[in-house]
Length: 351
Image (cartoon, rainbow, N blue to C red; front, top):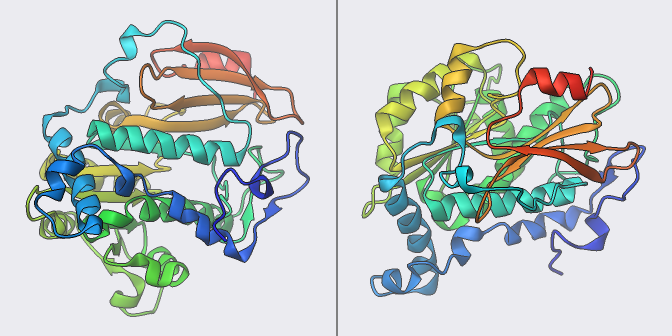
């Protein structure tokens, strides 16, 4: 039976759950709903004339749509949408659950791909597991320190959603993890679902497995060549998803962004470019280049504040909202064109 993301069995309650919500083993079936590229109607008629099957037409449509817009698009400063300056007070639905967060994320990525944005930044709260593998965490701060294993799982689950969304063009998709051990864990968890996508690592890990099993370790130059080799033969389009990079990997990403050009669409997942109290020249520069297509960050000592931005058709402001915990329903406090400053957030939500 097909299970949709909106199914009642996966809805987080309005209160504050005492623990993560268990997810049935069949939960992987609902990943089929994360296929916006396959369902994009734009340009489909033109593509269909050049292909012999509906499946091939859908895949080509996804690539052609992104690549044609990527060529013309320029990376916006501050990672804002070009129409931001025209909004007044725009209605924005702020998510109150992990389920709602995932639905909003899906919608934002659809808008980004249709708009051909070549540089995309996505951020979710650290360690927020999405129910892809076993449990779905509530949209609240964890009690105590979040463990490394949980953070790695949360990052991997987010990457898994992108693998599902780009299923139609996965032969042009590369997903890069920090280490070979993280890449190996992803390949093991995803199995045959990897399809023709390439799973690689950006550095050495602790895994003793072979480089093939663990995910190839690549340098910036070899990754650029690989992206060019796996790009669509007609359009030159390719897709790179970089999962939770750290500073040493962000330097590689910065160099790569300049080398591959806008035909390769790069998605940064949980790169933590924003929301820092101390300056970081590299992250600040990347934050200027990469559009904050989706950003959900809990602030305050108890996570009572939510900083939120979701790219949507029309205006896409930053929103700051307050939750009266243990309830997770958020009340909007203000909107802004620019990302809210750390000083203002600290004043509103003392940590």
